[in-house]
Image 1 (spheres, each protein chain N blue to C red):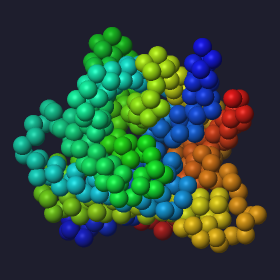
Image 2: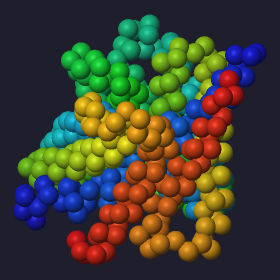
Image 3: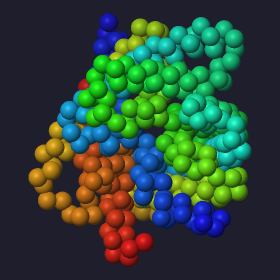
Amino acid sequence: MQEYLIIIISAVLINNIVLSQFLGICPFLGVSKKLSSSLGMGGAVSFVLVLSGAITWLVRQYILLPFDIGYMQTVAFILIIASLVQFVEMVMRKFTPPLYKALGIYLPLITTNCAVLGVAIINVQKDFSFGKAMTHSLAHAAGFTLALVLMSGIRERMEDADIPESMQGTPIALVIAALMSISFLGFSGLI
Amino acid sequence: MSLMQEFTKGIVKENPLFRLVLGTCPALAVTTSVENGLGMGAAFTGVLLASNIVISLMRSIIPASVRIPAYVVIIASFVTMTDQLMHAFTPSLYKALGIFIPLIVVNCIILGRAEAFASRNSILPSIMDALGMGLGFTIALGLVSTFREVLGAGTFLGIQILPESVPAILMILPPGGFITLGCLLALLNKLQKKYAW
């Protein structure tokens, strides 16, 4: 039990996927202008991330390893993720059209979101059991959503601020991310 | 557009990192030292060049409806090759870049060039495009990592240039990456306004 708790705390706070591992920066900068769309993006990525975490683990354990084709890992993983994203897109278009519209271009981009492939690869590198891999994926998904929501909260308030012209847009967002990242460094003493 | 223009546009006018803000994940993660930054740039350029060539050659064969999965598989194959080659020939760099070598697969720049350029142009312009974009990205990584290594570790390519007591360790920690890239982008915005590239 304690092991699982450590995995969760370390994935959400200490090794936060965006702020300390630099995975999934594109949506973090791109979709964090409004709280509602950042929640939607967080939800979509979380769903894909957890599902792909489970499927990639099973595929590696029961297809790649028995046939001794571990080197096909990258190709296999990216294909799984791409088809999952397609699936999520279809489901969203059917059941939640406003959310589908709001996420726009970023939905197909989940395929090229390094967070999803990154977590699948970390699961393999750390040699997790299925339960631990699932906990790890879930915790990273929560960490991603947390970072995205915090960021969008700050950026909504920033609309009123007077920012120098050349700092507007991405540069100031990166500086905010740096400050958030410094505060997340404070969690490193937790474990 | 002439071949030379295809080459130079990736370096300044459409620099993938500084102007288009693509490929930020590796740009922040591996730029803790100049050596890692340039190594990443080289691996990236290799994959981009190979995938641009193959996609340009196959552009009339691949049906439009399945082009994205096809591109992804082509890119993933070259990334796997790069991964294995680096594992064999540059083990220390392989270890330093770690997870970010397989993650070249999901680098938005490569898929972006495949979709926007290689699938519409013949092989020669595609090669020039890949070389220009690759060089532009490598220069950008080199610039970011120079700031971080000099300020954070006081070294440049491993050679001590600042006294050992001076360095701000924060610069090679994660926040340093964000802050360096943010300030560089702001600076380039300012320069661009002033000189109107």
